Structure formats: C-alpha cells, structure tokens
Length: 170
Image 1: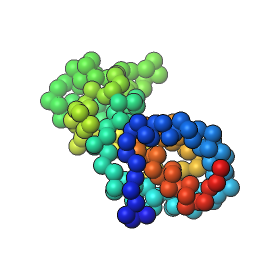
Image 2: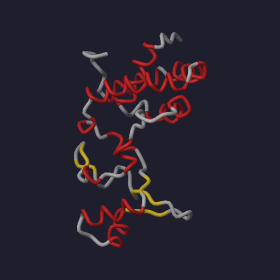
Image 3: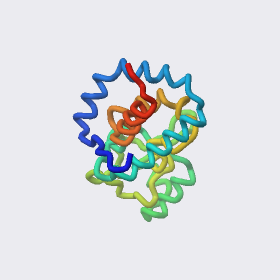
Image 4: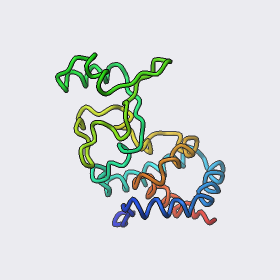
C-alpha cells in the first residue's frame, strides 16, 4: 500500500461510485463471509495508509453534506471557545429535535471555511471520528459507510483497496 496513488477528484469519485452501485451491493453481501475482527484489522491498516496520504482538510466535502450530532459538553466547550453564551450559540448554530438531540442547524456546516474547519481544535466528536473506519465493526457498519462512499475520498479509496486485497471480483 505505501506509495499508492489515491483518487481524490470528487467528480471522478461520484461518477465511479454511481457505476459501482451494484458491485458495492454485492461486496456488502460478500462481507458476511469474513471474520469481523480480521476484517477490522485489515480495514484499519488500509485506512491508516489512505488517511495518511489524503489530507481531508483539502476536501471538506463531509462538512458540506453531513448533519452533525453534538453533545451538551461539546456545546459548552464551543461556547467558551467562541466567547459566546451557550444560549447565543444554540440560537445561532444549533437545532434541537423533539427528542432532545442536538445537531448543527445547517448543511453545509457553519464552521466550514473553504475546505477547512474554522473550529478544528474544538470540532465535534462525530467530526473527529468521521469516516469511522478506525472503529471496530466495519462489516456491520458497511451499509452506512457506503452512504458516504461517493462523497469521501478516504472512504472511497479504503473500500477500493479492501476489494483488491480481498480479491473481490464482481
């Protein structure tokens, strides 16, 4: 994997993703035949290589497409960071569902500046963890991963390398 060249052009990724919808559906179904822990280990190695090679701050596409859930402690920290009251921060940037869940109130995210996060050091846990490829349970979360496959160069390339390593043939 070291020395690999990865696709980062969002238009190319989106077009290829569209062409590979059926292939990815078959790949999803094929993953049930793999040991989950072994698959996670393989994904983590691939992800680490891809993630090191692609600077996500030059893309920012996730910030243009995702609704980000945030916690009360994150709201409190951000209010301090932005030198705002929690109430003012909530009024300007945050929405609350009837169930009490809080999330950024607009897509793209208010804090996206160009392709970078203007609150990067205080970004939310969901932002820090995206695209969640470092976590266990890849096989069980793969359907969700596929939702972001056309929009995220890191996900796209990790999945494509995984297919090659598993010798997946449509």
